[in-house]
Amino acid sequence: MKNIDLTIFLVGLNASFAYDDLSHNKDASQSHTVKGTGFGAENAVDGNTATCMRTEPIGPNSPDKTVWWKVDLGGVYNIYSVNILFKNYDGYESRQQGRFAGFSLYISNTGNMDSSSLCYKDGPELPPLNFSTECTLSGRYVIFYNERLDGVAYPVGYEVVAIVYTELCEVIVKGCGKPGVYGSNCNIPCPNNCRYSTCHIHNGTCFECEAGYKGAVCATECPDEWYGFDCKQQCSGHCRDNVPCNKVTGQCDKGCAHGWYGQHCEQRCVGHCINNASCIQANGTCDGGCAPGWIGSFCEKECSNGAYGYGCVNNCSGHCMGDSPCNKQTGHCDRGCDPGYTNASCSKECSSGTYGKNCTKKCSEYCLHNKSCNHIDGACTDGCQDGYKGNICNISCESGRYGKNCSHTCSKNCKTCKHTDGTCSCYAGWSGPNCSIGCTNSYGENCQYLCHPLCANQTCDRFDGTCAIASKMGIYGCLEMLEHSGSNQKEETWTAGLSVSIGDNIKRFIVELSYHVGSLHSMRNLHASMYQNQLIRS
Image (tube, rainbow, N blue to C red; front, side, top):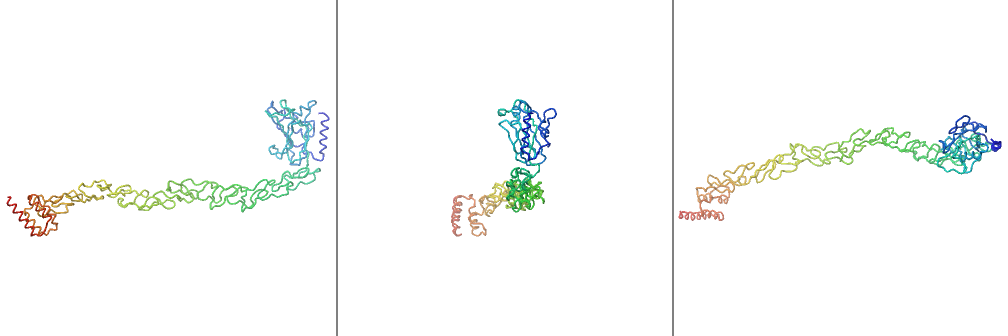
């Protein structure tokens, strides 16, 4: 190395002599190391500019595309500057500058670049090999990073295609070696509420505030409903009695409002606890068990269809209207019952003698043996009484039919037939329960009239009562009977029934007698005249 390089580097050290060397002999690591010995990451912090670290090359012709080196300062410190002495070779200064060009410096509390703060980004000009930059941040790790990615167009002068080694001979991180102080002599305490007790090394402003505070020097307490570092986090808003959350932790010191749980009362209770109790703040479970109709670790699952009540151990009646599920809390059928069932849960059959929806219909009075009908549809389970048919025995036999299931046919001689037992009201000329017996010595409907005593052998036409043979008493005897008979039969009935066999004159007499019944004396005169004519003709 040229003497001028060392001289320049030492001048850089003297410029920040008031600050401590935070990186000397601290733990260092790197992404990969070139084969061989004496190129470890620790060479960059050993205080010897003649020993340098070296990594495997990066770039298009190398399997590695990125490189990093970092030093752990052992604690979080207020940093002032970072000085880097890059490796130089006589006559190759431009090449070395092109190898280091484009690098970045990060300050981190975790060693992870993703959670770090950018201190410096090189480019597009080539860097000096004796590099120094102010970096007034705070942190524990200082990270050097560079890359040569495929497909990226880099500025002129950057070494890309050729072998690109990274060689750091010395890295010096300057700052206050005592935590919690700032100033040119590192003797002024940082404000009380600065996070990690670190602040800007020049003016003492806080990089971050402790939880519960905000402002340049972290002297302002978080407003209500805000908490955390720099008051950047909002409370859940679900603390009991609307009390603001803890400004440091964000927790609800007096517990969660009803229906919320979690460390910050940020999660809604998903279940249905018994007696409408709130779930446990720690885990969201229901301490006293689930309300009726709910199960599960968090009481978040409704009873399956067909079950209800505490623990879903009760079975619905199965008779809710249209197979609708019962109320999972009470077991009641909220939409009503299927036909044939009653009460709130539809578990009771209709009482005897009723059936159908809401049990409002009455069974037919014509069920066989007077037994009750089916409670659902009203069907007579044993069948119908004689004379009735239909599922509910509400239909009388049609005309001309009678008996069980209306299976019997009424007699053709029936004028009317009783649908229950076939008892008939007979047409003229017939009698008997089913009108199967012809009239004897009688005539008319149901044989209700006796043949007239004047009819021979008291026989007459069974349909209209006319005599088959005229009486031997003759017409006069008929008249005598008319005058003296104590019969209750009407005169016109038996008079009109005399035989036509006594000749045309007798017919005329009978007809005239039917219309001109007068005194018995007149009737005798007529008879005499008629009789005389008959004798002459004989």
